Amino acid sequence: MVPTHDSGPDVGTSASTAVSPELLRGLFLFEALTDEQLSWLAERSEVRAFDAGAPVYREGEPADAVWVLVDGEVQLLRATAGEEVVITQTSHTGAYAGAIRAYVNQPSPAYETSMLCVRASRFMRLPATAFATFMRERLPMAVHLLDGLYIGVRNSEATMRQREHLAQLGSLSANLAHELNNPAAAAVRATAQLRERVAGMRHKLGMIAQGGIDPAAIHRLVAVQEEVIEQAAKAREPLGVLAESDLEDEIADRLEGLDVAGALELAPVLAAAGVDVERLDEIARQVGEAQRDGAFRWLAYALETEALMDEIEDASTRISTLVGAVKQYSHMDQATHTEVDLHPGLDSTVVMLGHKLSGIAVHREYDRSLPAVPAYAAELNQVWTNLIDNAADAMAGHGTITLRTRRDGDDVLVEVADEGPGVPEEVRERLFEPFVSTKGPGLGSGLGLDNARRIVERRHSGSLTYTTSERGSVFTARLPLRAPAQPVATPNASPSR
Image 1: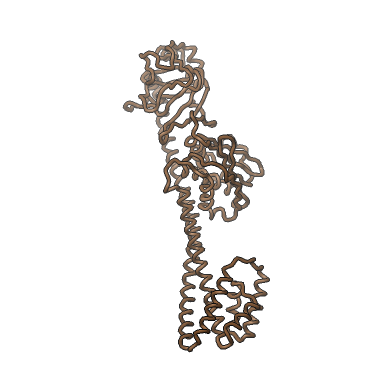
Image 2 (image 1 turned 180 degrees about the vertical axis):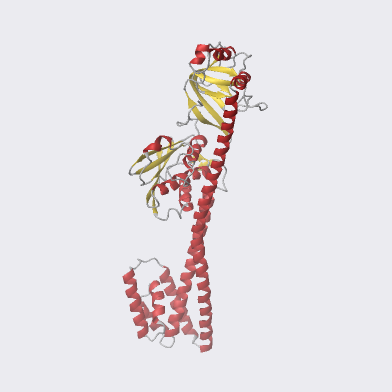
């Protein structure tokens, strides 16, 4: 338990000592107070010393004091999803934490964080009741202003973060809808055409049945169809536009020479299936002169039917791939925290942003030998979404994004590089701060990188940094391969002041 003003020292602490007005004046929080105010606070305060590793207070315990750092170094931690993550680390003299809102009339407030000494530290400890009395009696206007400001900022930030998440969800939904629409429309179109071809083939079968064709001839027609369809399914070097046009002309001329009706309609179908003039003559000999016209038409119908079924299969596969990407992106079927291969998450994010990346080349430099990383996979995908989306915006939709993974000691690095103009000089130092954006008015909330850094640093004990120049920017997420024994401090956090 945290020591109180009237209790003796706990494990890891030494006995308390008195506070002098001179000590208080050396702390920036009190430097503007009058001698009488300093004396009033000094009489009600004490200095407490803690050993390295000792907790000053724990999250959830009654918030009974304001703690001001005199010397040493501390971490503030918050419990998240069953683990403690560092939200700030400082050695700044005068940094304060604890019951800093004790002046608000509310029942039994509790500490919202835990404070841990990184090294031996001393604190001025001011009881919450004394702090509340001082604020209410001596600074009543400041109490109202601070409370209103606190509530306003908290509500505004919560609203903006919600809007940011909704905007990102809307963007991803629009991208996904566009990506799904293309294969779905292709499948519908191919199905309609296939229905026409099947109807035509039924008609041809009826004509064959009425014509009294020799069964042996029908068997030869079917055999020829199977051979040509099998040949069409084999991979071959694609022809250029001019070469394919020349082949179609040759086939059309040869079909006309064989007295086959509709040669111009049949030629593109046969050419697309890889049938050349020599194969055409061979087919003509196999089917015989009497069935030549009907045989080529039937063959063309069969080839078109196969091509349409391939198109439907490709479209269905594309839809299945997109659904799989959504599942991978959201990790709907996996535990919240698990060992994660980072590459499928990066790839699924690219798929989800496919429409926005339509004019951008995505180059992958993956180290496939990387081990799995302990992570919240769906949250990391939010990080990749922000970084890749920002990279696309930086290049105005044209250029190359490079996704790179590599190992650095006990960490894995994920880099997202763009070829944009770089981060403007005036915002480089504040780029990760909330509401700071390089985009034009109404084009970004300035919370994307802040959210990304929160996820990497607070949820994964990693770091998110960047380098930039006029040739582009590289954002690097560093993720530990194992959970650290002690929480790692975030480099961008600052003490309350």
